[in-house]
Length: 571
Image 1 (cartoon, rainbow, N blue to C red):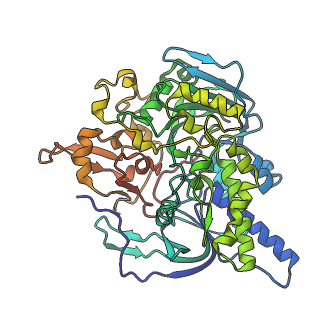
Image 2 (cartoon, helix red, strand yellow):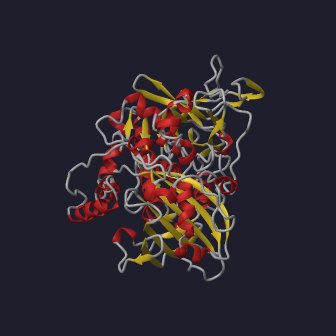
Image 3 (cartoon, rainbow, N blue to C red):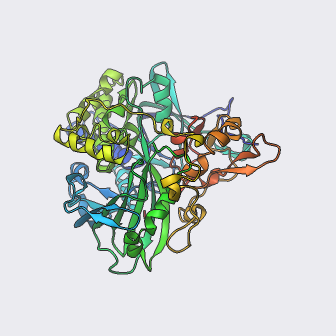
């Protein structure tokens, strides 16, 4: 029997007053907090008789420590950091400055290096970083500036009053699998806030609530995502140069799927590598973790890793939809920043700098709102106006139709990309049509039983234990831990669909698209189709692929008890 996380009723919850609550301690949320602190300091220097306080500004982070849930490629474009903290390079944890790039088109047996690196993939001046360590460092700056950061506290529910967002309810702690209070029960706080900034990353649970409650996606393209599956390796000295970047496209995906690989040479003979698979593929048997293992088996990649050791693993989704998938950025009492707001350049596959800049602009708006004691939509709309007049729009407008051009495969996508380059990002249409990725998944009876030219992508990777790995081996290296005795944070709203329709129509693709072996179909002779869904929520790495890619839209990801999840130390 599955017991799901439900809010406890009749609980007397502590109340806290806040001026600004920032949900999410990633680059966007921390940049927002730090910029807000800077503005308050400047105001107080100029107005000794009208001081502003930082005491009621809070950052909520669901991980046990800042950075534990932070995962990306990661290459940092320094543009936003140069604005936020001049001189930051002297103290930030930067692993390597990019000195060389190569781009390859892979086939199963060979590779073709592009003679010229396309401008969007030219990374000279960018930095290879551990986003985990970078976020820890940035968080120290925020705390030194006098802003309170609450780690291990997840935002579980938006507080609203009509069309006004009035704050955030944090998660209850000490609830057992049956939804009953344990002896260590602590109710979540109702954090009453004048301004709530959502910086949750892709597919944020509170952002999802907000979008649904106020129908914010109406008239916009649906958001489309990719999932990046990543490993960190120690390799022999000289295997790859520090600061060397390699991008690939093509194999192991076919020309009908969109995605690509990366390899970054870091310091101390560390290599960050991974593969991003766009979550709009057709075959429900495709497994993104398997795609990464196949990628590593290509002789180009295998040669770089020979004699090395995999030490960490993780997965993260990315918002690919771009400018025309962006929800409204502000309303009565709220703003959205970073990946939650679709601030990612899908052509460059970079969003850290955009998250930081959007956080800074949200902070400037929040500061002005505090000065004026005006938290209405008309006041907070300054944030959207600031984005539109900043280099964020300059960058994203040039790629506004980029991913949508690949809906019919690689070849047509490359043609559309060329046309978009010639027309300043427009291409053939002012706004390209788009479809949510899960709607593109085909029924099994519309696909070849043996997988056809996708056969090598289908099913779980077995792994050889040296170069390639099965999911559970990879998962072990993510450091994932959850309190076992708590309600599932993965909510299946109708398991009957899983056990009857999905078995025959799609073959239960949750077993495949989840990179952490959370979903399994177990044999059960009493079930209509002989199988029943089984969850392993303690395996979850918080990528939210299930919430995105489930073809029936019956899976909802919500934050587990605060502190649980992966530990992306050094990634």
